[in-house]
Length: 185
Image 1 (cartoon, rainbow, N blue to C red):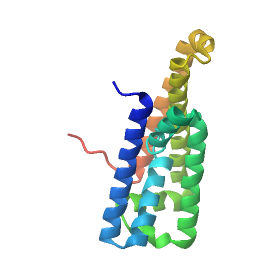
Image 2 (cartoon, one colour):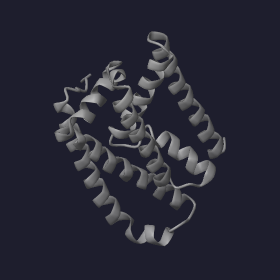
Image 3 (tube, rainbow, N blue to C red):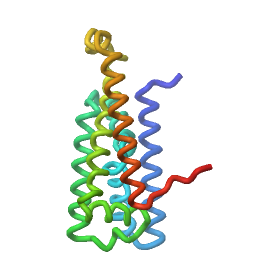
């Protein structure tokens, strides 16, 4: 069986391949600058507008395994980068928000604070709750804070689970107002 650090490195490289492929596709469809900016806006959408740590977690987990930096710290950096990307894009490259459906939705969310910034707030809460679970799992696996975990685990998990469900339901309610529909199979 492969070592966790080796597996994390492979997953990280696969993520980079996906991001680079998406960038290459957009650059081919439009041009290099449009592809780059649209890819960054798309990545920032998945960071800022998803209630689980998907875009960030793919970076946070390998960073935790490779360097021991808590995922919550690296996720704060990921969020800061995503926010800066959108501030710069809104100020200097706002036309690029019309490139794809995802970038258009991101523009709609950013330019309509009420009610759509609630998507970002709910996503932030959900993301950091899921990161907390990931950090806690890593701590338990490495026997850090084990007594606290064993004493309060069940109560803590129930409270967080109920809160997380509330966040997800609220998130999907607001997203449905944007006209984003999940296809039923």
